[in-house]
Image (cartoon, rainbow, N blue to C red; front, side):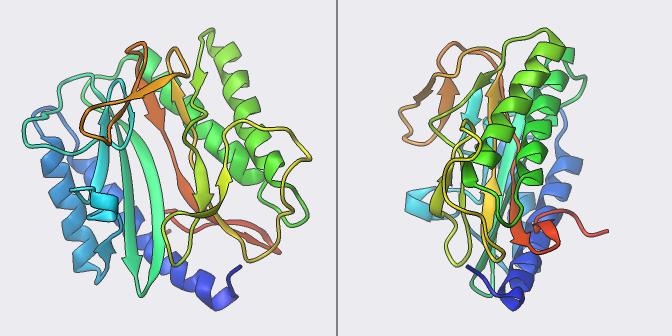
Length: 254
């Protein structure tokens, strides 16, 4: 539980994350390496007086995660991983400012997008916002998870596609640590789980694939890929529950 002042401090961290993701979004184009994107994000974070949440976290070697095509989450930026026309890259970014964390992710379409990738990313983003809308006082955690799942399935039906909903990874509490209780599944039953109260801050982050919901971890100990090689998308925001409804702390400044 956070006080209003603490949530304001988390908003400041969230704005740093938003700025870093905006810079990466602008830079992501064919010929740019994922290591280039990492350097851009770290520069924005440090220029704001913050530090990257991910760098050194349980040994992670970079400041952002860049997951390309069949990579779902936790991809490690590398100089040799150069983005090509039509690539799909999910960028996950975290920053710590004055002891408080912000965490968000976007999926980017590089160069000329594939229509199926556009649909997949849009469905994932819509599922995230569906979950965020259920972050209201008096609700249940299962309401959030169910809304994510329901919207993902609705979009799959509307798109005439099969989307895998990754169950092994999901959202989480966030505050003075990047990952805190509770775990926020991307599948769930409405009316179940803990009661939602003002002052809670949760990261909502669905991951959808263009095929299976099964994943594998590569030998680097970090990168998670789809078991069938299908492409994946990942969207995330850190959100506070308030008496006035959900407040997206990692939304860009307006």
